[in-house]
Length: 172
Image (cartoon, rainbow, N blue to C red; front, side, top):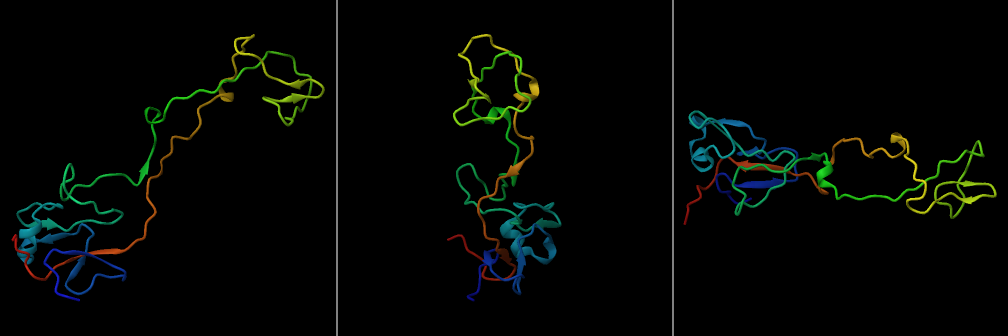
């Protein structure tokens, strides 16, 4: 492997960070023992800036290039999201029913029926605005459980590591 730049981040398919590299797990480092690396990273990823600084934390994160509205060290996004009613387009379903006395203890649908079918009576449905009946709240309740769903893209997990030693990168 060619000598890396100090502070360079690479992905590895092995289960550990190689010698002179550290996992990008957000760990706090002492400035006194890593002055050159601190001069490059500063407190971009955390630390108090007087005695400590932090390495980038790529655990569960996808790297995004800086620029535009994204600045180095910024985190964005969530692994799980609960949709709010304001995030779902409004929609309705036309459903009409009649207030009639039942004539079967166990009605069952038949092919082509709208709501249910009763022997020798055809399909039960009515035209809009004809003897409209309010339905029980639990018959038309909102769906979903307000639980978060996964927001992750298909992924392959690799180890991100940062070079603790290497060539100091010049600006030009």
